[in-house]
Structures are given as C-alpha cells and as structure tokens.
Length: 344
DNA sequence: AATGCGGGGTA
DNA sequence: TACCCAGCATT
Image (cartoon, rainbow, N blue to C red; front, side, top):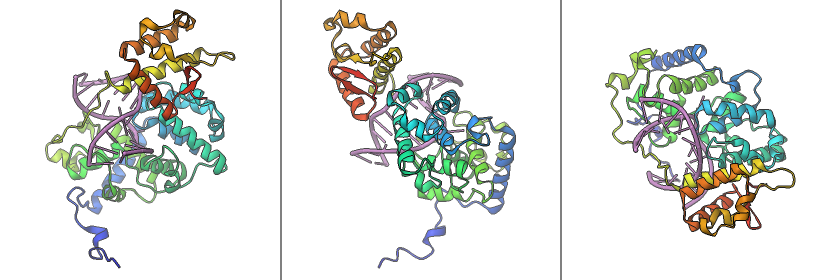
C-alpha cells in the first residue's frame, strides 16, 4: 500500500509558483472584480438572459484562440441558422465549414458538429450539465467545459483561460505571464478565488477584466481598481524572462492549407443544385503549364482568383498534394473522383 | 512538454 | 515584424 508522502501533502505544501493569498485579499479581489464587471462588461449577446446552453457552447468554441469581436457576427448567424444541436447535427458539413467563414482553426467546426451529433443522438438533445461530462465531448477541453458548466448550468467551476491566468499571476505571483499551460496546482490555486454564490460573475468577470484592463500587451494599470495589492505592479512590472514562441505564417503549410480551403469554399459558394462545387485536382496540383485550359475556363472567376493565390504560394505540386491528403485525412475536404470539394 | 492548427488586428 | 487572441488534440 502506498501512503504517498505525509498526510497533509494535499492541502498546503508551499508552491513558490502560486503563493498563499490572505483571506482578506481573496474577498477584496472577488468583490472588486464582480463590481467592476457589473458596470464595465461588454454587452455580448450570449450573456443575455435566456441564452440556451447550446448557444453558450457555440460561443465558447468559436472564442477559442479567437478575439470576441470577430466571433460575434458569426455566432449570430450560426444560432439563427442552427438554433439547436439537432439542427447542426443534420446540416451538411460543407455548409458548416462555409459558415464558419474565416474564424480560423476550421477543425473546431468539425468537432462542434460531432459534439452536436453526440448530443442529438445519445443525450436526448441536452447539453451535458457538468464540466466532467462536457469534457468528454469532442473539441471541449478543460476551459470550455468549465465555462459552459458555470455560465449555462450554474455549476461552480474554476474557469481558467489565458485572461484569468494572467490576472491572477500578476496580482499574486508578481509575474508578467503565466506558464505555457495550466496544471493541477494552478487550477487548485485559482479555485480559491471562485465564490460559492456568483461563481459565474466571478468567472466571467475576471476573464473580462483580463480582456479589457489587465491585458497582455499594454495593461491599463492607471484605471486598475486592484493596483494597490498587485504584486506585479509592486515589483515594477518586470517582463517575462522567456519570450513566447510565435508561430510563423507566411510561407507555412498552414497558410497554404488555408488557401486551398478558400478555393473549396469559393467553389461551394458558386455551386447550385446540379453543381457539386468541386475543383479539379489537376487545377490544384498540376504546374501551370500543364493545366487544361478548358478546365480553367469552366471555373467561376471568383474561384479562379483563389486558385491563383494557391499557385502564388506554392509551385510545388507534391507539396500541394500532400496538404490535400492532410485536409482529406482531417475531414476538411473530400475527394470527388478527380476533384476535391468540401465534405458532404 | 512540445507541436500543429487560422487568420486577422495592432503597435 | 512580432505578438496576441475565452484552446484542443496528439505525440
């Protein structure tokens, strides 16, 4: 039998990364954030009373790694088009990807439809009510599960997104930035701030505070109602020692994948009943000189422009072909004889 | 723990 | 150009 360490190891071994916080400071921060939130929150549509759990879930998926300002119009269109999990479950995947538009990470749209199908087919159309159950759905991780459970179902969870982590780390650890990803210790530490009542106001409020005041790049410390207890402020706002690895874009596979998807979405947009909205693989992969002019002429001008973009990005048919295989493998595209289209 | 995955806004 | 944005899944 394994009695690991001593019996008090769970609760309070000091962890230098997450210092102890006094009860007074915990209450002060709770009240300050919730009061600030009630007067300064952005009027986001999914926060309005009566928003369904499904609509909240859609907003959270769309907001993963995507600024809220870009999410709002897409969210409105999605909720209008597919108000329930059943509606999205029944939709053609091509339509789902097309309406995802340019939000980025289109695999999120695929996972969301998969989740909708699980909810519709196995859960009687009900969005799971606890974070633990939500986390079993595709595309839903610890953040999204906690957020939906707190905002839509009233479960007292600890919501830890990049904003919350930054706010708490600055206030009480005196560091500029949190680590790359939150661990158990950090989640437990952050959990002490979540009040029993108004947990949703705390969770949404501290997130909003990080988005509007305690921002990553140029925090508005002048107007911060917590600057008097902020450890990072007290230490002189020291920058992080290590700079984050920033991803390249120009010239990468990601850019080219996006350009190929753009061609498929354009073809889908132009398509109608007797037109599948597909694009010849030769047009995508053959070098310019070998392209059949008739195929090119048959293409709508809009799609042809997108195709030019792909060629500008890569003149290497093998590379384009490899990325196409990847898209098909990921479920973002489908082979249609010798053509490619959005998946049905 | 590291990597891949989109796309656009901002300084 | 570099950084950032309500992360997740895979290795």
